Length: 449
Image 1 (cartoon, rainbow, N blue to C red):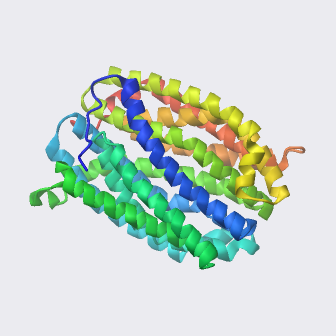
Image 2 (image 1 turned 90 degrees about the horizontal axis):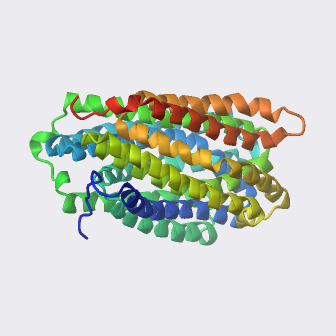
């Protein structure tokens, strides 16, 4: 396997973004595949209550994982800027110091998630019928945070170097492992929710080991001289300045989802299950946006490091067009195919009927969702840390501010859950785009500071 490191500071922005996005998209789709298989296997072979148990932990698990996701993303931004500036020394030092930071925060979040799973889920009004299964799923998945952090940290740096293909390989292998183990643990071993969570951990460990081995063997930047092992206060400061706001952005988004999940839980098991199934499909819809966003972060970071602001602007325009086209394609798919989509996850008619309404509401907001990723990724890639926190705060305001009032309107009721989601996407996209057009991000590059 050869190294696929490449520069994004020259050439067509469209070709570069598409070329980076497609492998990312394939990898993310495989990742969502095993998330969907989790849901399908649990929903079809265990029941809608077990599916609800898995779904009830989604937001809180995202919160515990968000710290490592944020630090990994922040490290990738710094690495991309140093790579664009051709500063190999600081690039290698960034890798070393990132390992210390990401590893420490991962261990802390893992322990907290395992110890406090039940009190947290009780506080969130998780229905008693699914509480024990939800606790099991959360504790087992939190035990795997370190493996997730190892994979995400290394792959974020590899992508920062312009290589989105290699992490895909390990993600595909992990997805296959996860799918096979799901079937074995749930259908053959009858391990129910525990089996699904355990299969996920094994798959994550496999991806982490593969990524680490490849990076050390094939990418020269990972062959770090011993003198760079010493902690560097200046670089740690930069990692914190960029990584913590991105982590807080993710944490705030997670908190907003937790607040909404609490509202969902108040409507009972059927709505929890329908929301879980609809959410799984929407996670699939988000993958092109997520993949494009990662491409934009790397593209922006490298070009900011090289001092090419105009290329960053061109990348924003190209990404917006791609986002619009995909949104227009997915709108009729979700709206007219809602019932078929729901039947993939559950068989209960009541759950299907609720989920169909959910998908038909949120499908009209897909472009706003995509623009969150485009605008946020430019700001993050440029190192605009304050924008990252603002972005997360807006999502909290949206989900907390819209949920209760909308669900209390006569004739709207539980449907307010999904109107809240759509309106929050719209508000967040609007604020992010306003920040982009303000131009403040142009002076936020880490390189040279």
